[in-house]
Length: 279
Image 1: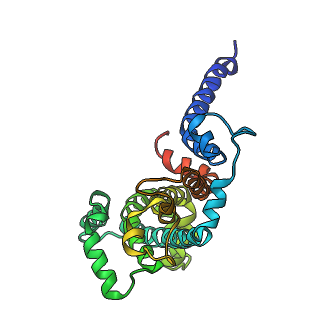
Image 2: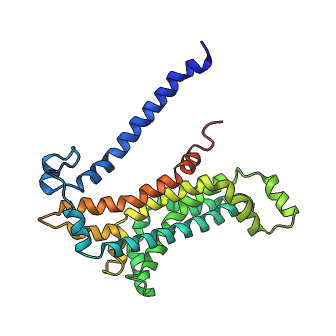
Image 3: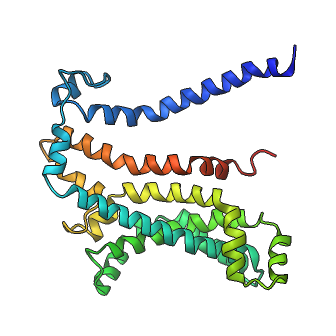
């Protein structure tokens, strides 16, 4: 019997396991989206079944777009998330390159200092951050959220990217210097393309906490003009009554950007996570 015949059952088994894990991971997402197209009676009467002609209802989406300015909230979240990701990846990659490429006194301590943000939650400094934003006049602005989320994402980005950049060949960088390339050109044209999987990994793991965060939007930017999707969804949560149709519809719409980002960067994400694990 050939080697291909022996490997066929293992391949089928691996695919079956992967499919099982995918179904388990996506089940809550599918459940939320499925129930967002039901009436209230359908949600509580048969939450695990798809919408039927009897239970199908778009009242949740009508409420979301009718009460409040959900499209504006969505735009605010998109602006904050994209801008924060840009600065986290740019500054994180530059700091990671400096730590991995240049040897100087205090290099290790500097790396440890920059990585402290992974161990110390930024929310512990909420009061000081709020006082700083009030003093600088940045309360109820998207700039305040972008600054906070950039600071929140940088420690992990620097930690991951610096480790990946250590694996970039020194011969390649030295060849660029011999050809007269500047350090910035070496960084942007030689190093960054080689660490794209790690950049995608950092982008995905940085985006999700920013997009889903309720704490800082509630404290720093609670006005109608600066509300994010997560904060805007709280309109449908009452002390005594909760509009579950609207909540599920808002959550379904909020899930879309995360799913789109995952689809776009899934291959790079898997490469970034598994890089170095298999030789």
